[in-house]
Image (tube, rainbow, N blue to C red; front, side):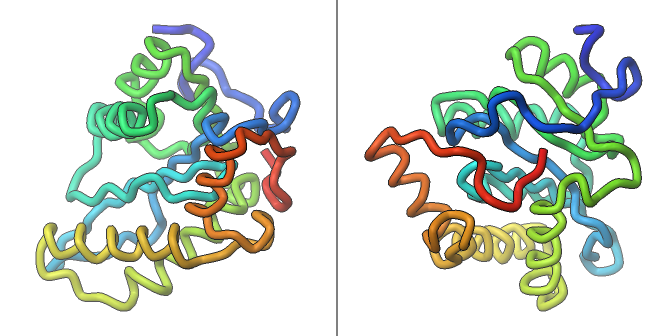
Amino acid sequence: MNPDLGRGLVSVAFGAIAGGLTNAVAVWMLFHPYEPPRLLGRRIRLLCIIDAFTRESLAIEVDTSLPGVRVAQVLDRLIAERSQAPAEIVLDNGPELASRALDQWAYERGVRLRFIDPGKPVQNAFIESFNGRLRDECLNEHWFLSLAHARRITEEWRVDYNRNRPHTSLGNLTPLEYRRLLEDTQIKQPEPAGLYL
């Protein structure tokens, strides 16, 4: 276990990343939306992973429980899909995200975990905005009948968000268009407007 990582071991200050964001794999953000939806009276959990540079929603994992080991498995799947790990992951202080399993996973892969200060969601304003859209446009609009149903609906919303939602901070491109532009031109951009890490 890396003594420099983990909420219980060392509190990591939340500030600017040295040099700003320089590419699409620099920083991913993980969070669990507040006010989790219910599945026939039972709470379900969502793990949302966002690329801070492209604003792309990389995954919305849905289940009744998402322990640290499961979070690590989702991250490994995304790294395999994208062929590269992020340099850093920004996350809240939820028990799943502050677990020893995730700390060990990050240490073994050389990924820095950066925790926002407890009770300071404004430090992760983009995620709060994404969380509000997800809640208002998807979670509050559906009564989930099964986990499979919840997974299908949230995945459809995630795909729509990436393909059809332009962001002014990305030059009015969608997250998918912006990522493809980066891949095609190999350009490097300064930190997108509105992201204060």
